[in-house]
Image (tube, rainbow, N blue to C red):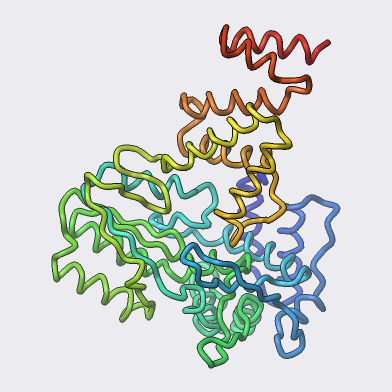
Length: 389
C-alpha cells in the first residue's frame, strides 16, 4: 500500500466538510479506491446503515478463541466480510485524520515493534506493564465522545454521525455476565481508535517519564518504561502512574503482567531483546538453523514432517495447523531482517542457505559435499550450472 500525501490531505479535507451519511459513504468509497484500486466496489449507503445497527444486523461478528502462551483462552471477534470491508476503509480514514502521540508505536503507519524496542536499548531498568481487557475498556459512548472533538469535530449538528461511526466500530458482547457495547478485539478499527482515545493517556505518561528521567512507549495495551536509574521503588512515581492509568483514564493495570527487568538479566520490550541492541531471542535464530539443517540433511519432505511435529507442539495452539516449512522459514527470515537489518551477518548467512535450498531442484547431497569441502562459492557454482543446464 503506497498512499501519497495528497491523497491523505484529500481525505482530511472531505472529512472536514462532512455533513451527512451520503458524504460519509463517498469518503469511504474514496478510501477504498486508494487502498485497492479504481475497480473496487463503492460502499453503499444501505450497507453502512445496515452494519451500523446491531439490532438489525445480528450477525456482525464471528467469535472464536485462540490459546495464549499461558494456556488461557483469548476471545477474538472477527467482523463478517461486508462489515470488515467498510471498517478497513474507515480505519484508513481515521489514520489519515488523526496523528497518535509519538510514544504510541502499535498499529501506527510506518512503525513496528522494532521502533518501540529501540527506545529502550541500553537502560539499566526496563518496566513492562499490561492493561487488562484493553479493547473492552472503551465503550460506544467513549468512542462517540472521542469523535466529537478535534480532529474529527463531529459535535453539534454532526453528533448523529459520531454516534453512527461509534456504533459501526463497537458491538454488544456479554462480558463477565453483563452485556456491554465495546470495541471488539479483532476489528480493523479497534487499535486505531484506542490510539485516538489514549492520546491523553500517552501525553500524561510521557510527561511522568520525563519528570523522572525515563523513557515511555505504548504498543496497544503493552506499556514500557525504561531508565538509567531505579525509579520503580519511588512511591511518588508508582502512585502517579496508577492514578493516571486507573483513576484518570479508567483503565486497569494487570499485575500478573507487570515486571521489572534489571541490567545483567535479559531485558525485553514488545518481545525483543533491548539489553545492548534490539535483537531476537537466541532461541529464534537457533530454531531457524535447526530447520535449515534438517532440510539440508534429510531433504524437504522429511524436514517438513519433523517441522510439523515440532511446530504443532510449540505453536499449534495459536498458529495455522497447515503451515509449511518453506513459508514459515521465509517469514521468520523476513522478521529477522526487520529486527537485525539486511546487512547483519547472521541474517545473510541464514538467508543464503535458505535461498540455496529453495532454488535447488537437483539431488542436493553432492552439492552439500562440495559446500563442506570447498566452501559455499564453489557449491553455488555447481548449483547454478545444474539449474541453468
